[in-house]
Every structure is written in C-alpha cells, then in structure tokens.
Length: 57
Length: 233
Picture 1: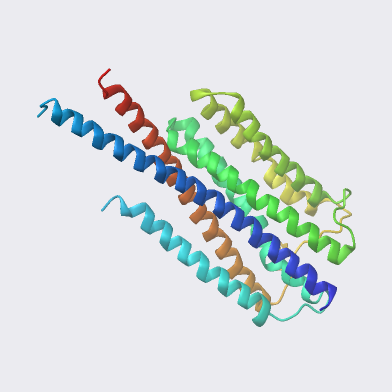
Picture 2 (picture 1 turned 120 degrees about the horizontal axis):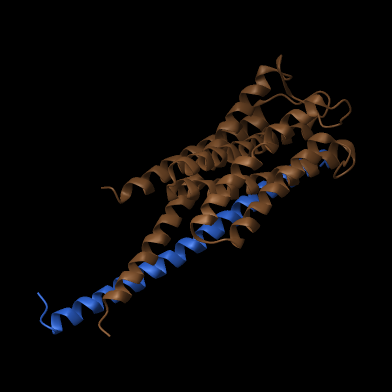
C-alpha cells in the first residue's frame, strides 16, 4: 500500500476514533441518568408505601 | 406522546447522519475522481473541510444563542451556547488532527507556523477552549451572562480566521472556495456537499442529544430535591 493511502486511512481512523470516544462518553452519561431514574423510582415507591402505611389518602 | 418526541427526533437525525455519512464515504472513495495533483491524499478533503466548516457553524450557533440569551435571559439559550461550543471544540480538534496528517502527507510537515490559516484557526480553537475555563470560574446567572458575552465576542475571531488566508500574501494552505466559486470539478463538489450535509446532521444530532441529557439531568436533580424536602424527618 502506498504511503498516501496510509495517511488517508490515518485521517479516517482519527475521525472514527474521536467520534466513537464521544459517543462512549454520551453513553456513560446516559447510563448514569438511567441509574438515577431507577433510584428515584425506587425512592418514590418507598415514599408511596410510607404514605399508605400512615393512612394518607 | 410528548415523552417520545425528542427521542424520536434524535433517532431521525441520527439515521439521516448515518445514511449521509455512508453515502459520503462511498462517494468520496469509489465515485469521485482521483485528483491529478495530490492523488489519493486529496480524499482527506471531503471530511476535513466539512468538519472545519461544521466547527464554524457550531460557533455561529453559540453566537446566536449568546445574543438571544442576553436579550431574553432564558436558560435554554445558555444551554444551547455551551453545548454548541463544546461540539465546536470537538470538531475543531478533529480539523486540526486531520489537517496535520494531510499536511504531513502533502507538505512533509505536521504544522506550519508561518501560515495565517493554520495560526488563526489555532487561535480560534484556543479561544473557545478558554470559554470553559471562564465558565467554571463563575456560578449562577453570572455564569450564563458572562458565557453569552464571551460567545458573542469570541465569534469575531471566526470570520477573521476565514478571511486571513484570503488577505495574506504568502501561505501554503490552499483556498478551495473563492468568490468565483469552488476550484474543483462538479464530480468532486457533489460528494463534498453530501459530506458537508452529513457533518451538519451529525452536529444537529449530537446537539439535540446533549441538550436532552442536560434537561433530563436537571429535571432529575429538581425531582431529587423535591423528594428530599417532602420526606418525613
């Protein structure tokens, strides 16, 4: 393969890698948000149970 | 069905980005003719220039969001501004990296300090990186206000970088788009346009995704505070 082709491959690999890292960052943030939603829904469930035990309407 | 709205919109933009990016890669490598002067190296152009223009568009979006924030003082414009600048810096970094590899292939050097296009572009990138330092040094409403002022003032450097190469007498970075049109055949131009639209779609997809994440994060924070406040002691 010519050295010109190597440079072209390097450029497209850099673009692909940087964008992939960005998507991984976004995915990890989404996973964190998802964990928070899960925790909050569990907390609200406990909260509702407390209200029911206390005889709240 | 308001909850599925933003997600569906992001999915549509993402699909459009994937289709156009694939078309651009196929077009740039298999359909567009090989440049007589640079050969295969010229194929870097299709994404390098499209990414560079997209970074400028991102800074322009931040400029408009900054002006709108200063006029209306609505938080959403501050969010659009910070996300746009973040994406602009990401696209700028890609422009510098891909440009350096292309420079090494074409000119035999990674960087040329005497070239006005390269130096002014580096100044633009560093200026926008400093935006985040400014942002982290203040809080609350002042943070949004100072950030908006910065994004408006910093945008002056973008046209400066664009015109510097046209005004300067000596440079090695080529100018493809001049007042008389694009210096390339239509068979190349059409794939550049596809690639440019793909990069703009990518920018819109990432912008929408980041804004949605920020809003969900904020809503969750508020919900947590309300839950804490309503818990019996």
